[in-house]
Image (cartoon, rainbow, N blue to C red; front, side):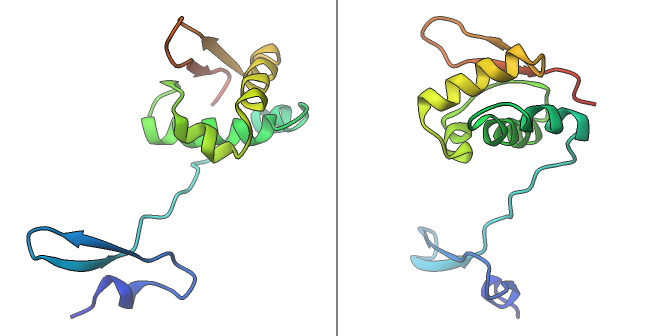
Length: 120
């Protein structure tokens, strides 16, 4: 019988999780994160923008795949995926919106809702 540890390569991250049903630690291999295909002209335009904009753009592309929609609320996960400060993140949203790559709705007291534009 193969265990998740047997299936993992030496470079895979392995986690131990407590299973309350069995009362034991269980070895798991988390699913790998990946980004589905991104239109080249869209990411090329994002890469030409200043600062951490391309990192935020890639995080938004990842969220698009997770949410299975071009419109989604931005989560804290996007901020951590982009590996930038909150200020840099907000500036990147402004840059992407000015370039016509996204539309942003910013309701007061709520997370921003982003729609990816020309993403096909």
